Image 1 (cartoon, rainbow, N blue to C red):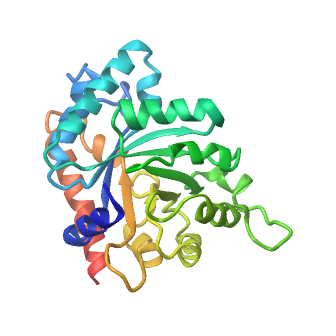
Image 2 (image 1 turned 90 degrees about the vertical axis):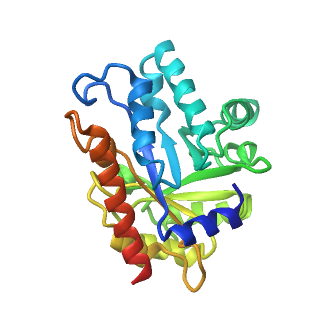
Length: 270
């Protein structure tokens, strides 16, 4: 999906809802035993509203071979959706050279994902191998976890914070047309500062919902300024997947996704 296509889709929908797939066997609804079918059930319940999906590879990898088989089943289902949502592999790869190239080939080419999350700690070498024609890198930038302050907010000798230096580097390693940035919902003011720095870059925003971030605050601080498309993919995982542990889990997931999409839309069009 190109920059122009993603911009148009979000503008037409009025929201950029991304549904994260973090299937935890200890939290699945009663009577649900198959990991792939649970994820497919969530997808089927939300496909009418979600503009993107983000399977978290760790939840599949933790189960070994059965988990990898489930991931492939879920990935195939996502690829076959007639809505053709943006597919983001939440894999957080961060290696260099041939290793990074193999990760990129396996996830972006063989598995058919549109985008992959990447950690930039090893520098340009850990990002560039993922920059492929028609694909997106989603680089970690300003994350929503409590420990983010350990490194991301450290002051450098030139006055910038580490996350600001990373953002500036992203602008030279890629372009807004092939590189997005992860920017957490729990730090809306810093999100606004990041938008000042990266006026044309799409942000993938976790932290709304279970982590306590506000969709209204995210849109107010992080949306594109003076141009269409919002520039935000706002992710929710647990608040949608585990909206109910009962027999109504699919209906509850749909309701949760629709409510968040409406909240984003209201904030965007205010």
